[in-house]
Image 1: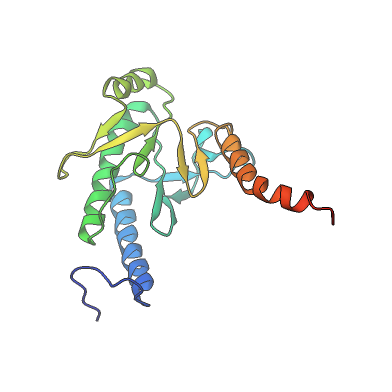
Image 2: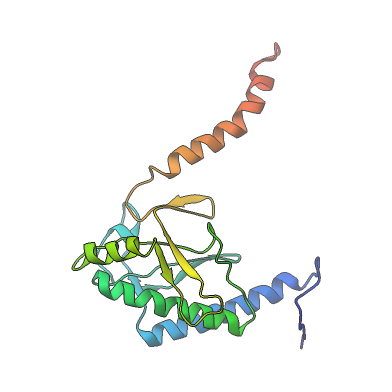
Length: 195
């Protein structure tokens, strides 16, 4: 057994393994709790666009996309009111499971945020409630009463994600990144007489 009360030391060769095992247990606990609450998104693979831009769920359940310690969770509902009731249940489960294993959620802007796309009955009403609340969804039963920020785009693992079937936000960012990498070497490569 490995007993650590205050975290591991920097450079510990077992640190990544211990983190991954513990994080996997937290995610498994979260999946079980979400399944017991009936909060499961079923994905229908499509040939074009992101799956959240399409309405028809099928038999492939998904819970999250994980990259190291970056977590991306998907939640969908048949109408806007049900979605707004499910979000606090999801966040309460996340907070409980992570707290159980000693993880802390960073609630700062740009880290833990929410993309919302309302459709169906009461979509306008629920969207107006979110805007009137300052584009935040309060997380109850948590220390310091954190709030989940609602944004219109989010950068996750290098890609800009929006709630719509569009890559318009991602293309300019990738173009700027490519230019920033290309410009310093362009003159050195193409400006030499040897070329």
